[in-house]
Structures are given as structure tokens and as C-alpha cells.
Image 1 (cartoon, rainbow, N blue to C red):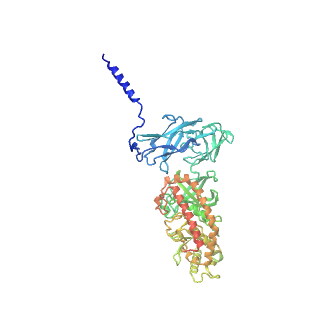
Image 2: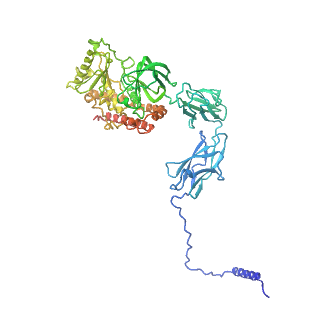
Image 3: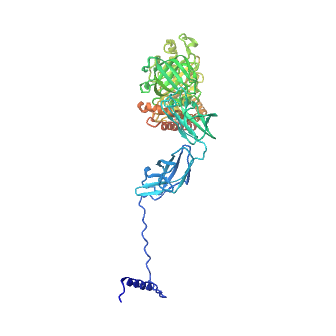
Length: 632
């Protein structure tokens, strides 16, 4: 009988099974010295391949700007990852998060470490969301471990505060305030100066918002924002600081013909007004005359000006006078040089140093930038306080003063001469139209005789030496200001002043014009690490006097801590100028003035930092020179 094909297959399978189940022999055969099986090769990652990514924390809380920054680590730092490689997904899927979005990804200074900014999508409502960061690099996609981001644990919030032109016709454009979560402060500035800071704000709040207990309605309530305003929402407080333009006083000058000021000789009639910005009294329209001023500075694009009021006028809290100066500081990228030098001089014994204040200048409605409004050097009880001579003071004691002298290499004054040592002297007061020939002759002989005495063999004589004719302390303090500020102009000399009152001694001061080459080693290349003006003017002789050297060391010991403290003044003034600097340098380029100071191409904040460093170094250098006795 024949078996079917299927049965044959079945019988074969059973036989094979029976063979497989046969018991093994008691002494199994063992192959001597068996070879170990070779493990499969481990695949090494290619250099720069993305291996793993992780976040540094497991949970995050949004700050008051409704953002959070998280840090992500890439295991292979050399992997070629760009900002576009990152995305934010839900923890359980690749779906987009409900509450958050990835706003920006940027590398840090640490290789392989990135900073990611997550921003809230909807400002309303509390949440806690579980997320992952997805990183895609070519064909490779990796995910971080899940992490949580929750809304801040605050019941009360204020956000999105802004001032819209639709609510405030006085505004030239909308003002969106920037929020600082660390101080809970909204900050911003108007595009144009406003005469009135009573404005309407729009905002969003999680509960009723009040100011001083008064309920505020977004887009409706009118508030005076000329000073800091504090909103209260529930138990939380939020500060609002809206700066009017740059925050500096605003000066408006309109010439009678609405034409430009083009002359240094001819006055133009005008009206002047000042908005003191709540820091000073406002000045209503006052009659004034204006003309150009300066030597080199008049040739630059940003012009300096001289002002002469019709009557003595107090400006920005400074004592009344007719004559004022608008310094352009055109070559000064920091805008601080003159301001700082004048502050330094005010720490000394110099009897008077010009007071000054910053203003934003508008001429015939056009903004010309930041200027330093400064007292003009004039003989007056509130300025150089010496006797004002008349044309009748031509004999006796009356002929001895007072005289105001300027030493300037430009040699462009009406009444002037050069001494035997080629020192240029001019008489600034009495005014040129009032000075008489007798007065000029007396003053000229007084200066010439004094200079001869200083360089004579008997200049140290107690009875007849130079010390009987000059105010020694003023000469020391004056010299120290130039040394501290690195002002080489005393060598020229240029813009150097002295005065002599009736019956009095020759006195140094006041200081003037400290923006050319100061607080920089670019012009004063040999100054670093030492005193370098000991040979300037008459000082090459005066500082040979042991008494003057002793006085200089004593004065420095007294002044040094005061001058160190001015670093804080410099910092505060720089902070006050920050908005003004942005607008000023959008109008003018200090590089156009020749680059004398060496910081003209720097960003403003870097120029200020450079000046601060040099000032600090200069104080240390002078202090070391006096302590070591190394004057040369």
C-alpha cells in the first residue's frame, strides 16, 4: 500500500524529533583549547554627531515678563547645531505646546551650551505644562527629558502697559513700555518733548488696578507721569517710569527772523524758553541775543553758541547773569569731559568754577542735540568776584585791579601782548571797550615784572620773591586739575585764565575748555604713569620751590579721596545721559572733528567706560608719583 505524500512528511518529522531527544553520553566530548567567540564590533559615533541633549533643570517658572530662559546641553559640543534646529513640543507627543512658544535660541560662551527663551502665548490664566525640546540635526532627531514650565505663582499681575497716540494726541507716536521683572518696573520714553505729561495709559491687569487708592481704567484714566507712578494690583505694586524725551531740560530758541545763526560777531535777537522737566523751574519766553562762538569748534557741524539776555536771568537754578554759553561738546563722544573737569575743579580751592547743566537744544524748532549750558567767564559777584574797574580807575590803588587775564596761543584778542618768554597774555576784563591805555600798560608791566622775578636768582627771597605776588594754593590746585584731566592746553597755553583783584595777588583760574584731548593718552602720549605737566607755563620754575612742592603734596593728600568719590558722579551722569546720547549721535558724528580724543569711533557706552578707566588710572598714577617723590 502506498503512503500519501503528507504522511511521509509526518513520519520524517517524528523520526527527527526522536533523534533530538536521545540522551547525551555521560562523558561529552570537549574540544581542547576552544576559541572565544569574537564579539561584534562597536560602532563609534562620527565626530560632530549629535548624541544626546538635556536641560539643566526639571522645572521652570515664568518671570514677570512672561518669559523664561532655560539652558540646554549638547553632549557632543562639536555637533553642527544652528538655532533653527531647536523646537518646542509637548512631553507626550510632537504636538505644539498649548501655552508656550520658543521665541529664540542662542549659543552661550560655553561650548555645547545653549540658552532658549520660552514665551507665554496667552497672558491670561494659570498653567503648568510638561514639555520637551526637540533637536533636529540632519537625519538625527533627539529630545530632552520632559520638564515643566508653570506660570508665576502670583495672584495679581499688571502687563502690556503702553501709551497710544490714539488716546494721547500730544504724542508723536505710540510708546510701548519695557518691563523689568527684577524691579517690577515699566520704562520708556516719548519721541518728542511734551509740555504736559498728563497721559492715558493702556494696560492689562488680573485684578482692579489703583494709583494712590484711585481705581484706574485702561485707556481712560488720565495720570501725571512726570514722576514715577506706582500701580497697585491686589497685594502687588508695579512702577511706571515714562521719560519725557531724554529726561534732560529742553531749551527752545527762536530767532526773530527764524533764520540760522551764522556769525560769531553779530548778535541775533531771539526768544528763549526752557522746560525744566520737573527738575528745575521752567523759563517762559525771555528776550535773548545769540551768536556763534569758539575758534576751531565753530568750524564743526555741531556749533557752539553764546547767549546774552536782555536782563540778568537765572537759568536752571544758577545765579542770575546776562551772559551764558552753550557748549556743543562736538568732539567728545562721552559728552562728559567738560562736565567732569568742572566738577573736579569744584573740589579744589579755586574760588569760582563755571556752573553748568545739560540741555536738549531746539533752534527754530529743530533738535540740535545735547548741549552743556555753562556760565560764561565774566567778572561778577557770582562769578569771578573781583572789583569791576571803570574807565576812571587810572591811578593809585584803583589801577591795581581787578583784571581778568586769558593766556591763549590763538592770540585773537583786542588787548594782548607776549612776554619776554613768549607767553601770550590778553586782558578779558575790563571789557575791550572800557579798558584804558593806562590800565593796559599797568597790567602788562605787572605780568612782565612777575615773570622776570619768577625766573630770577632771587625768586625764593622771603622779602621780595615771587611768593609775595601770587596765590600759591590756587596755582597748585589749578595745575592739579590739568594733571588729573590730562589737559595739555596749559602747555600751549590755551584757554588758561588768571585774575588779580585790586590790591591782591595774581590768582589762577577759572578752568575752561576741557574737551580737547582730555581723559585720554592719545594727545598726552608721555603722561602715563607719571606727572607730566611739571614743565608747563611757569610751573617749570614754581615747582622747583621746595615750599610749592610741599604744598602740592599736602593739597593732593586732601584732594585725592574727593576725586576718587567722583567716580560715582561719573556713573550717575552717564546713566542720566544714556537716552540723550542715543539721540545726539544719531544727529552728529564726532569722527568728523578729527579724532583727537581717540574714542570717537567707539559706541557711546564703551567711550564712557574708557574714560572712566583712564580717570581711575590717572588718579592712581598721580598718587603714586607723590608718594614716591618721583616728579620727573
